[in-house]
Image (cartoon, rainbow, N blue to C red; front, side, top):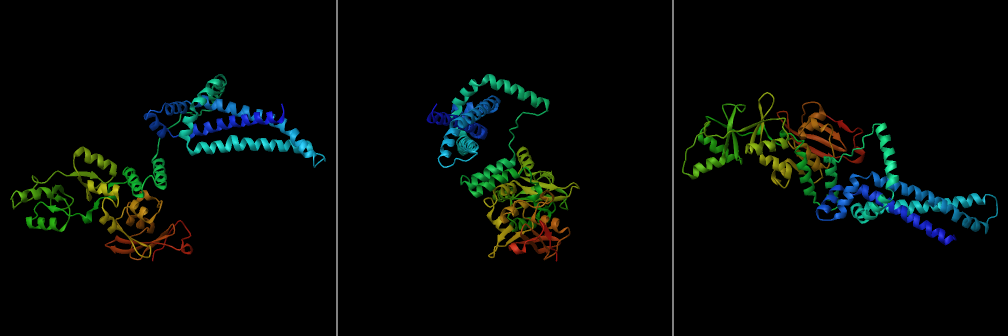
Amino acid sequence: MNLFEHLALLAVLVLAAGFLSLTEISLAGARKIKLKLLAEAGDDRARKVMALQAHSADFFAASQLGLNAIAILGGILGEGALRPFFLEWLSVFYAGPGRENIAFTLSFVFVTTLFVLFSDLMPKRLALISPETTAMAVIRPVLFVIRLFKPFSWTLNVIANGLFKLFGINMTREDRITFDEISAVVEAGAQAGVLQKQEQHFIENVFELESRAVTSTMTTRENIVFFDLTEPEESVRQKIAAHSLSKFPVCDGVIDRVVGYVDTRDILVRLLNNQSHFHLSESTVRTVLIIPDSLTLSELLDRFRSSKETFAVVINEYAFVVGVITLSDIMVTVMGRWGSPLEADQQTMQREDGSWLIDGSTPVAEMKRVIDLQSLPEEERYETAAGFMMFMLRKVPKQTDSVEYEGMRFEVLDVDHHRIDQILVKRLDPGQKALGAATPAAH
């Protein structure tokens, strides 16, 4: 064969190897969820790709056979065709020793570059751009290649499976999807403009219900407004007028002896029915849902659904009331600023200098989102901004106590009976950053 025929055959081998490389990456990178949607829309090619992914051993064996055979044949053909050409070309301006070796090196570099560029790098990058579309486009010729190499691939798979079994390697693929993977997809969607930033936070908050405890969202004990069974009617009216709440727990003497709750709509109905007088008793209050403080928000949603209630009292292991929580509180946790803009503004406020004023009761997740922090140290040990400060300081905080973490200073601005009311968060200049990951700076 002349040089042109050698180069034409070499080009065919390069294209064949490129096709196999492209199919390998596209089949491996095609997302099962997207293929499933295409298959449900009626695309038979997507079903074939999914079936091949589930039983991919035959294809990869055939692909590796083809790639290695093409690489060996391409090397032999390239060296045989190009070395004389490079040798003749070198003779024009170089007649010294080593011409054979130089010609061999040049032919080797040329053929290798040709295969790397057009049979490996470019096909794989093309396949990664749209793996599902590429996989469906090549699925029919791929199935033909598998049938062509079936005897050889079967033999190789038998040997490979025997070796895997000998070394105790489990070849079962797990297709579990984790929260981190879903979060990464959602974040990628937000960066691509498919999702708005608020929608991204909404989706992430829904998944966080599984890990967040009820104590991170409840109204705490000191902020509970409750009625006593013997409370005068006038006092009840004043509390309802002073507090914009729809439900009030009813207690027998002290807050830890909860007997039920009152819905202000029931009182309104009585007033509309011209019942000007009403009194509280165990027969007129509703049964309240009592839950432990160890429940997650997701578990509480299940309790609300099964009991048909939307209000619950939270108690600790000593049967002391630690807070109350409603279905609306959970919705605010999910919706964030959408659900309750006034409440969110009261908990976090950005000042003109870029610093933040954060209420001590602000949930950790909300504080991280507001100040743009990915994580806090040992987050499972506290639930609020105040809890973060107490964990970092390792003491009961006082005014002006501060800690530094990830280039930010957290300073206690106001303390009320050992409870942190407000925290100032300010980003430090690069030269002011703490040397360690987290540095208490108590004063």
